[in-house]
Amino acid sequence: MVSRTELQVIRTVLGKQSWRARAGESRQQVAAVCYRIRKRKLEFLLVQTRKGRWTFPKGGVVHGLTHAQSAGLEAFEEAGVHGRIEETCFTTYTLRKRGNSSPALTHAHLCEVLRLEMPQEANRRPTWFPPEQTQACLGERRTSHDGRALARVVVRAIFRIQRLQANSGAGMDSLQKVRFEASETRRLIARTALVAYVGRRKTQPPPPLLELDDASRKILRIEASTDDQRFSD
Image (tube, rainbow, N blue to C red; front, top):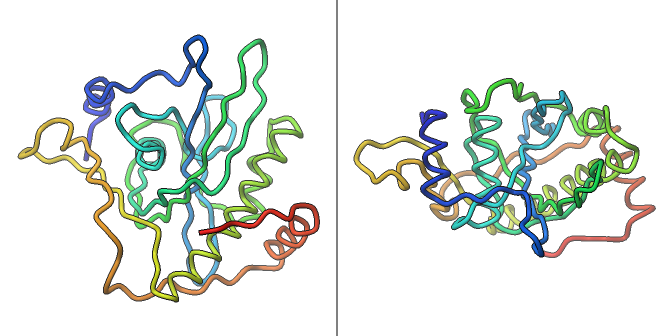
């Protein structure tokens, strides 16, 4: 397990830049929308901010890493996630900021959680929620604008997960494994690591079919009536 001190060193070695934009640059962040399917029921993993709000694991883009790898790193640090992440962003969202700071555009990546360990960051409280409760938690202690923006992320995640399951049944799989582990035999950057994208699963059985509950179906019906956006592969 990588220690917090090692991660701080890693960030320095990798040249992680602050997510605060320099003059003339747009601010961008990445989020890992972490999920699992247990007994055919969908659940999302949220963590708490320092102000006590529920959120997806998110942060700045790490210099030298892709957006997906950066999102995977945030999921590992904030929630202790080991899993598989999709390289392509499935949606973006912007939360309004108080004061004069400009809002950051956040790129959301789906992350299928395979296992959890103790988060590297303290007081994050990773917790699983069904879709409707996920939306409710994300809306707590936020403006109505930000609550709606995050609720739409949940809906679009459900659409995307359904599409991924359909593709997996057809032999296609766009989720790739990102692992973080310590190794005394590798250089610092490698051991900190990102042993990223080891390839597609070839012999594993297909995932269990997703069975949406009534609340999730209602969420999708409402979204379908107000938003015609659909996702391509």
